[in-house]
Image (tube, rainbow, N blue to C red; front, side):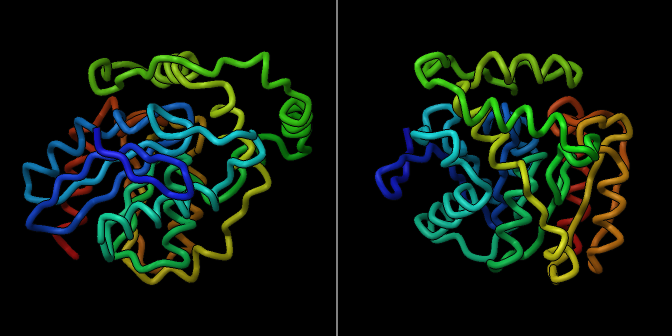
Length: 263
């Protein structure tokens, strides 16, 4: 199995070079790299290179010791180290949900040929619905007081490419069940108190924003806002929910390919 090691931590990845641009897929919270397998195979058939990998804590990639160690910066640096390791320059980043936020953070400071954000946002997701921060405070208190001995450390990963024709709630339950508790909590910790609003107007590369009409996790309004702030961006509002890159991978792949043809 292919691994890259950075500061004693391993990252599982699958890299297939192509004749065209290399597309780097970044998965979301409570899920893993398998959410991209079906979609990426379509791009491979079109001649694009494809890099899939698991973020820290997911699958066989190393976990971090503390919940508080997880952050978007940590994930961004993992991505940077992996691209340097594989000598991939100027990639096209495709991020789903939290993966979009990681990709956005990377694109704000590194060279990227294009950026594709799917069902994502630029800010703390809890702020979208919880203006008084009450729920966020409860979660933060829980994260602070959690006892490591009480959480699941070893769980079997779920292959989302083999069981893809379902709704968001199904994927959410599978993700929660098949992801380590410390990783789930670490991901939430990474998302909280995050705001990348200042990055949006600075992006110069072409950006494609895709969102599902029935996305209740990162609603359409979030994508519309990003589209308005990012000058060189395109917006596609499609049928489907938050995990449309899994359940509607064929339709999403068509939008991605049409976008890539313009680069």
